[in-house]
Length: 403
Ligand code: ATP
Ligand code: MG
Image (cartoon, rainbow, N blue to C red):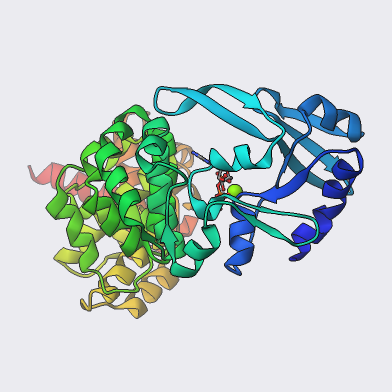
């Protein structure tokens, strides 16, 4: 048993001493069996929430309606959820009711995939009522029970399935695959934020090519905003096998590039992503197009950021296109400012010094200074900037006189 479980054992034991059943369940059991890093330890029990609250001194109600109580004990936090069944799904997503039950077997029945339907007892025994161990061994993702019913109840399971294929390198069992395909249209009923979370994890996973290929095979893309161009999406799979995206910006940026998007902001609005994420993807896309046209300049670096440029260069390298990481480093070493607030003189100081009126001209002048500094034509010191402005004003006066 890994340390996380050992640490949580006293919780199981305390519940059992009070006369109830308790097990570790869910993804952490799966991940232990796969020898993967585990994150959250979930506990399932026959005790009702009120009973759990009697057993432990410190608890927080985090989801009583769904049977979940947070137990605070020995410096740890543990989600303890009563065995439950779910009946009558509304919106293809939320069960209208959950019923608390005393039987573990009923709880395991409601879980999505066989490899997510294990329970682990405090003596280390694995309870496997749905053939999950065999599926783990065969690296198969199989729905618990009737696949069609399960995806009809909750279509998010389709995205979860694709995500597990991508993170675990599992194949979709054939009936599960067929049911995912049949019910993919129900994805339009699922909140886009939840779909984004799953697709994002899929794209960033080690075996994203597998999950993404499955996604296209079941044509789930037809029900995702802006993703109807199957052929363009399939071009993503031309990346060399085994290539892993560095981060979500690179993955989504490259995906939108394949879709022919030059900015990305409009499409990502429909995905309801954060403003920061959308801006980062947009910078990536701009950088990608600039790089296709030629070398990066110091202005590209300044306006788009080192991170966007590096992500682009990495993708170029993956495709065996010409790259120049040293150039990026040189540009970065030479860049004097990262933001206009780092300019040694403020617009106000310029106005006082040269007795300039407020207005658009001062903005233009300041922008000219910024650009000259970025291009390395002007030293970012007050002296040099004042000299530069003096000269620029003389020149513009002379030009004026010549007219
Ligand atoms: P992760 O490693 O991402 O945490 P997980 O399998 O633990 O994966 P969670 O969302 O943490 O996923 O859910 C914990 C468990 O609850 C799952 O292993 C599964 O048994 C069950 N579960 C979660 N979501 C669903 C769902 N939509 N339908 C059925 N069972 C679900
Ligand atoms: Mg989990």
